[in-house]
Amino acid sequence: MTNNPPIPFLDLVTPHKELEKELCDVFRTALNTAGFIGGRVVEDFEKQFAAFCDAEYCVGVSSGTDALRFALMAAGVKAGDIVITVPNTFIATVEAISQAGASPAFVDVDERTYNIDVRRVKQYLQEECHFDADAGATIHRKTGRRVAAIVPVHLYGQMADMDPLLDVADRYGLLVIEDACQAHGAQYFSKKDQRWHKAGSMGVAAAFSFYPGKNLGACGEAGAATTNDAEVAKKMRMLRDHGQARKYYHDLEGYNGRLDAIQAGILGIKLQHLAEWNERRRTNAGRYGELFGPSPDSVILPHEPAWSKGVYHLYVIRVDSRDELQRYLAEDGIGTGIHYPVPLHQQKAYAELGYKDGDFPVSERVAADIVSLPMFPGLEARDQERVVRQVIAFSRARAQKVALAAGTGSY
Ligand SMILES: *Cc1c(COP(=O)(O)O)cnc(C)c1O
Image (cartoon, rainbow, N blue to C red; front, side, top):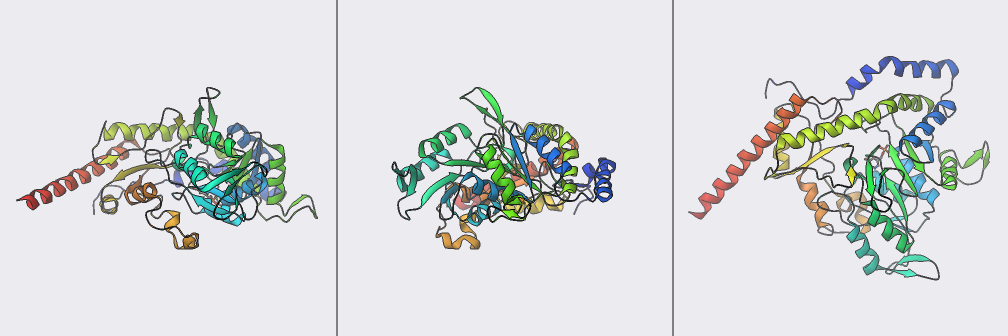
């Protein structure tokens, strides 16, 4: 072990200390008014977050998972439908799909961005489905099920390549519902109208998580769904509140999935800082890039295409001997994470889907090599220098070991 001070993977304590007074006032107001569920505080936050995302409507809910499930259901995904998504995501993406009554169909990701590979979406639709003109729907041949939607996951804070994805969706009559749970404030430059678009404004609807560690985090569980469609917004409001628009008159069976007022108040305060926090994450990502240098052989850095402005929820690199590197960094007090170690098609929970090892080679390859380095707005430059120094020291030592072993073998 070292005497170096620890560098946490994520510092959630400092930002809350800095905002302590304002955050405590939220709690005091809630106590004094007994306004705990719904009400003005929630509505105000919804307006502010919709504006932040350049979306017409925002519906506050109790988690990102609920947000995605309600978005799918409200947009028109029905029991028995198929929803296309990726295997390299947090399980909640697929839980939301299954729990909306649909079945997930996985397609692999792009090796540079780690986001959905639109070529694979096309391949799935061309090879395994046909478009039924009478029904106006795309049908999966083998099961006869309707393919209803695509869920791109804006992983690590970078948006999926939306222009071609929206084109394919349009051609096959599919809904696009964004999993923006890691991408609050991320932007995509559309060639179609030559301007930047925010995550949460491009699909029929989008889901955001306010889990504490996300770029915008509550002090507990919370989430939101955004949409530009008034009907979808209305349906999501009903779904989160037992299927009622008017108390005790239930037009459909819904859920208890509301956003509570204390979380909404806290989120409203933090939202005022989000653009600046995201900017600091981008600065930190740029600094990592400079510190690693132009082309570190054995370290693959995040790739940001010209059409993307990512918000670096995570800073993920690929290395050989990932597990060893993780231990090496831990010995120096440097915190890291793996997002995610096992692709969903290889999880026990989804054994029934019938996928096998090798079905999604990019996702599988990436899962073995990725490691998330410390990333948060208040990360210090000198700490980043130490992280990079240690990663490079490890990679050099490992490269030498490999060369040496190869050398001995050939004699
Ligand atoms: C965090 C996350 C979710 C789920 O959000 P919760 O608020 O934890 O329910 C869904 N999808 C992705 C990609 C996430 O990172």
